Amino acid sequence: MKEFKDRTAVITGAASGIGRAIAEQCAREGMKVVLADIEEEALSQAEKEMKAAGASVLAVVTDVSKASDVEALAQKTLAAFGAVHLLCNNAGVGVGGCVWECTIEDWKWVLGVNLWGVINGVRVFVPIMLEQDTECHIVNTASGLGLISSPYLGIYKVTKHAIITLSETLYHELALRGTNIKVSVLCPTWVNTQLLEADRNRPAKLQNDPDEEMKIKMSPEYQEAETFVREAVRAGISCQQVADCLFNAIRAGKFYILTDPEFVKPIVQLRMEDILQERSPTNPVPTL
Image (tube, rainbow, N blue to C red; front, side, top):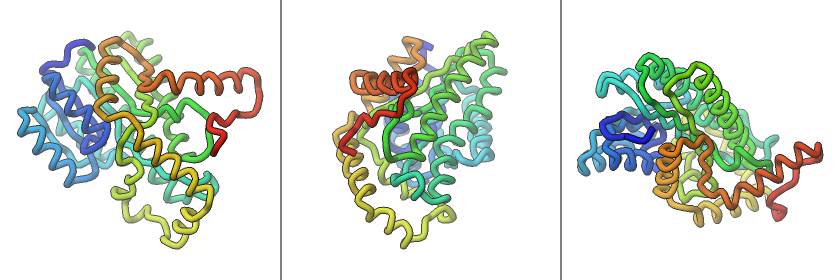
């Protein structure tokens, strides 16, 4: 896809961070924009500000972990704009801790948003795109951490590795059918976002017991990992840089979108060499 004007984009996780930057870039490209997010107040503010800037915008409160919400999102999109041409399955959350210390609630929450959000987006919107039989593009937000092997952020990485193989499979299947639907997988490395404050949107039923959570967060391993991640996020690239990278990649027809290839490619290569040589995984950040 090289032309975006007057086409319709749907972006999940659009009220803040990378999603908001993508939405604003869509508007600058002349697209009609559907903002989907679970954070109602921030979503309303984003809609208000984008409309004030002259964008054609529809905001839909959406819990991407629920198929019914994503189905409603699609129906409201079609009712308002008649079609969808660009789908960005972008909503994401994360938790830290060792994989055996993370609670069932942690797993349900992160898998629900990160992985089921993409699954629901694909299941609902691909049939619509196939029926339209027009040029379309799907971008699934994974992560540079979905391409590598390292300690901590285990649940987050499980979802991001899964999104990459889901996207690769989707690419192959759509190509075999000879469709006009293209696929990309966005793999940002460190980006200055509110990812570490994602708990603000965590459903009450998936909250951890406060005492149990405090015990986990006070462990030296958790503290060390959190400090590392916070510093990396704070020093990360801007969300607008990610949006620019995404649109350049769509225009170029790229599947893998790496926001920091010089950093991530050597680590990906290290992991691939571990696999090919059948050796134990190498920690690319030996200080952790």
